Image 1 (cartoon, rainbow, N blue to C red):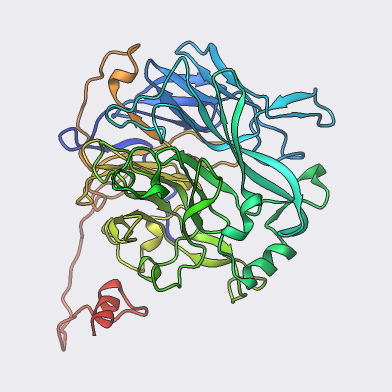
Image 2: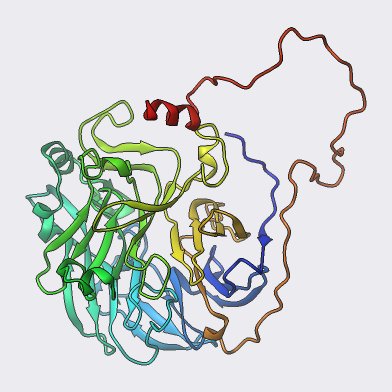
Length: 484
């Protein structure tokens, strides 16, 4: 569906009066980790650092990795997780989860970190009042990989997800393996049969018969301080860990003390208690909004759409793998106790015609959402490198399109974070210059004819043209049908 081959990159919209201004950090293609201001100026680059994701700590420190395992031997395994200072010096490192000897490479200790981590002091890795992550001490929560066999799940080798907590010296003080809790994940018989036959097998180079990336957990954070725990709901203990698995369409909370799954959303969204939400598919960055921010205690998640899940076959999934499909994305804010959707951002809220232009807000993989201190939401529409900020009333107040590309010629951004100017004392607060939205109906590139007609004639009409039924039901028409 139509996308222009010519489009602006960098900052395209900025309303300083309504945006929550600060610095934004993200992975800049293969350049490294970049920090930009609100006008899109690239104020600092940690060249060569890999952000999966990149996060800023107070004082201008940044977290990332210095290398990734050759995909012929492993999938998305980062060598380490490091904290570097403004000048790129490594001041903390964890890399002692597994010692690996891959053919053609020197034996190395790996963290096998992927997709997420959190530093003690802040549950989710982004700014919240009074919740500053530690920079010179503290524990670190790390999402990692482990290869193993579990014949209850499948007779194939599994790429399992593990969640570690390490102290400042790198000692593992807590470890949780997803495969140990298969019975708690809510898979029905059809899903279990599909998983046993093919647990999302990925195969590169020397992986032989492949390895089953059966859950593909892509976020892990602490639940953090919240009103539900304050009112006696132990499921939401601040030390518990919330995570989500994109291949299984599951969001869950793990009890930090027992390891049990004590709260879960998915994998079946046809159940009466969740049917009103609709199918959450291939989601990313599920987390509890931290205390001190608007919406605190609610679940915030980028519901990608795309494809995900296991179950009965259908025309889009002849073998029952990735059997839920949707061609647009949503941001959902959900009360985790009542399961009420309290706020959302979809193609409709973006102002697009639904369903004709629903695809205009769509990232089938990666992506994130961050609640900002003024109630706005920073959204990373990751697969096309678009970062933008909207108000609670859906007004677009900042937009940036990444100009950085990778070897696949994509400008994808896995995740981005906004932090206060004060977290980067090495820089003076930048001048904030408004960027007015371009009127795309009149904007032309050099050499193109301006809008306007040279010649007009009138044709006699029989009836006035009234917009009516399209070839597919529009959102308005669907709403009328539901109300009857």
